Image 1 (spheres, helix red, strand yellow):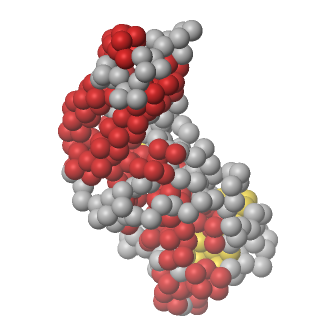
Image 2 (cartoon, rainbow, N blue to C red):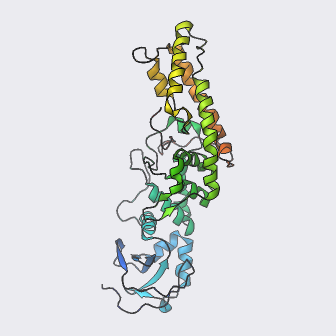
Image 3 (cartoon, rainbow, N blue to C red):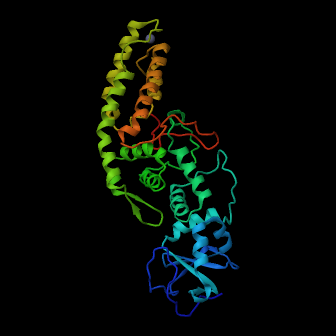
Length: 359
Ligand SMILES: [Zn+2]
């Protein structure tokens, strides 16, 4: 099948509403992944890449596609390789992410089990935006569910932190910018506090935005950027009050050796205050690894087991106290924050997205 040499006709169907006359088939690139020989509709993304797919299958899954196809009358429309053409404003990368989920050609998936590769933020971002735009309800629900398990509202899930989160957030890129924007788009408020917290932790670089895999950059809205900047100071203060409470040198009531433990705990507090990360905004990172290490007399201060247990309990208590305040700190209203059911197993819980494994 060769590329249609006929001059293109006037564009009729575009979600942008633009009446572009530059819709030349010349220079169009066929998608290597989605050029199905007996496909019966051609989708052209951003005027550059053509996808030949099955019209009926898309219409069954998306009411917007169904309406688009129904409203186009093939005889009057632009055609490409004998197929009616629908022009879309989405980038080819975004559209490919959506089509991979709707028309899987290689990896049909029913259930994501533990150990399966996590979804990339690029996949999630494209699928949420396009499934929302084209009303693919079931796919949208699944993608948001993966996002909610990753950017959890449950302190317990966050604190237990599985490595097997459904969305791969193991990157230094400020991908939570995308998560905040997806939450705003779909009114998924539950993911906002942890996503904003993570944005905040990235510091000034969050102003530079996050680059999608189609090369476009998205930014936080001015209002959300203001929330991040405003929260930094609050979190720094909270970090200081948190370490003061956790490393209060008062030995545990169960301590059998209060005098040496008191000395060891004071040494520990001094050591903590000397570290650089006391006032940094990653206030929800656990101190547990430090507390355990430092309890060892060989290379730490050497407090007793009862005192160590006390410090570990304070660590949980203090971080949970701040967790409960996260919506307030970021000025977002989240109904039932930290009160909902714990996420189901298998899809992973929550973990500090940019945790560095403790302090
Ligand atoms: Zn003790």
